[in-house]
Image 1 (cartoon, rainbow, N blue to C red):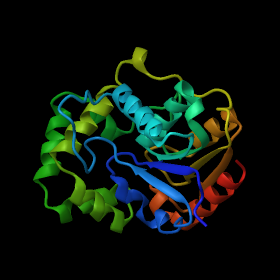
Image 2 (image 1 turned 90 degrees about the vertical axis):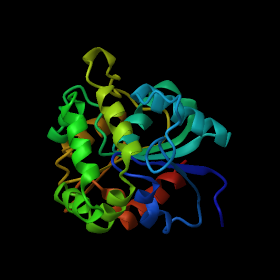
Image 3 (image 1 turned 135 degrees about the vertical axis):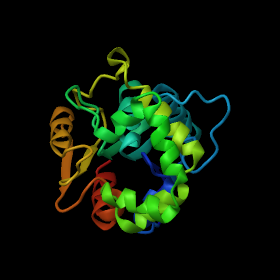
Length: 247
């Protein structure tokens, strides 16, 4: 039986909606929609600003088109956007599940992110990535912790639009005065925090911190790095079913 409520899945960087393919296949009895962030495997509108605030406004409008509160599921940068939506528009959420995107006052961006944030250096990094063959690009992504099959998807989707979008996002969080506040209290709906125990980009203690602050259930995947939606698709799907049954 198809569930009447909609679950909206939001990917991060450097992903596209293909991140959710293994998990979506396990949730065919549910109404699932995939949110493709502008510039990530889809068009980057010429009038789109590309900052974190532009993306969160885009996500708010995307949810509004559904016409009812959603079960929001988000990873990485998608998780940052989802947490901001929870702050600005909690009325849009029926439940919230997110992870591997630390909106935390003590978080320091990883080395690759800092390179992207640096003028000229970020452009040079992107130029080098785009000059690689998809096979070599995939090897770099695997070295960063991506599962090999997902790395191939990421490598084939990484184009100039994605490079521009990544730089815009990461450079919109350089100014400390522009950083969104961390979530410090329950968001008003059933919530779940998911994290890989071996995540080097966003260590799991950040998942524990936010889960405690917002009184959410915490699920840490042992032996899993950053990309739990792909690497732990079955366990994630079961956890989501449990969360959605509680709403």
